[in-house]
Length: 328
Image 1 (tube, one colour):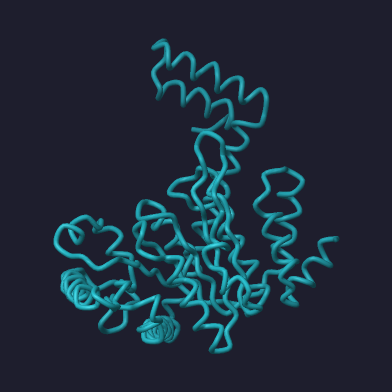
Image 2: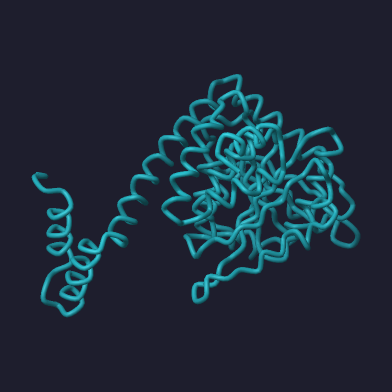
């Protein structure tokens, strides 16, 4: 399928075309990267914007169950939902489990939903390098909501926050030590904290946990773009599907506030600039490892640094001088 046909099929909402396009942007082959860039240029359309929601949570919190229940609720309201779930890759073999479709069988069968598990390729925090481009493809395909699931709680959340409109932190009932264990940095980027498993015997504990987090959020400095009362903590049950509608209503309310105040457009513009700069950095690093002469020079300097014959800073200056002759 040529790029023009692929782009047309993608804009028509063809799920197979979307899968092929994401495979293309995830490829590291040089010819595939050229085609991926050309495809992204063809489908660029500022008028097609989905609600981008980043979602993270501690292991065992029920993220997959939540995403399936939440996604089914949204499709039941007539929306098209894409889920980009990034699985951890093995640092040794590069393999990953990629089990999200088996964990979300009901949502995977929904014609209004699309689930794409992608290996993290051992990148920082498990965020696949091409996730941002996959989001753009999902928007071009006409999806209304794109959920980006991260692997656990860690540094990846900062990266996800730079490619989404809202960030949701999913936690299990518990208080005290667990509250202390959640990093302040993650609390500061969360727009909503959802206490899952608020059902059965855990219902009362979940409400107590919600109150604990609500109190902690009130101590944080208000951020630019926040509506009154945000960030918020709510309790939900993915199993009973209780509180999911209220959580979506809060997300829509915050998104509406940010659009009306211009914050939404400013953040998206800043995100685009950030990822442009990241693409340049990545291209430079790729050049360091792919160009034979550059790679050999790097290896020689690295050996000299490792042996103590050259200081790291001096070796770096020598490498930069070779790459950028005539720089100050």
